[in-house]
Length: 128
Image (cartoon, rainbow, N blue to C red):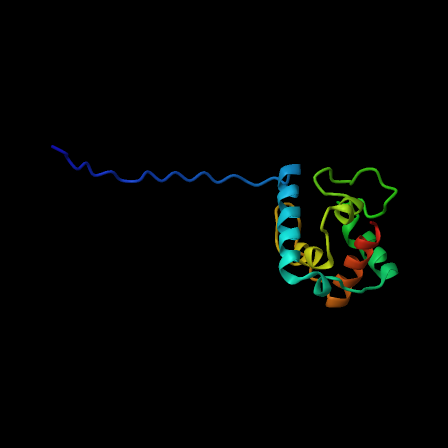
């Protein structure tokens, strides 16, 4: 004879502060690549001003990221070099747009104009 035993689910929540690691950066890169595929390559490429993008990157991003190809390491070891971002397989303007407009661990949210975003994206992609 079978007996029914009531079982209640045990819920356990553990909140940990997320630290960006190489694994998290790899996951972000995968999400960005998959996002770009959904938008289509033609719509993904954005034209911006490389000189303005470099100037803005040095002003805003260089505290954490290596913004020029010649830099071996980023000031913040957890922040990828722009040259690494640019050379990530499948990296597109749309993927970078998602990265700049979506909150993720370790990256502060900046408010850029559309033109500023286009300039930074164009500059990063020029580092391929």
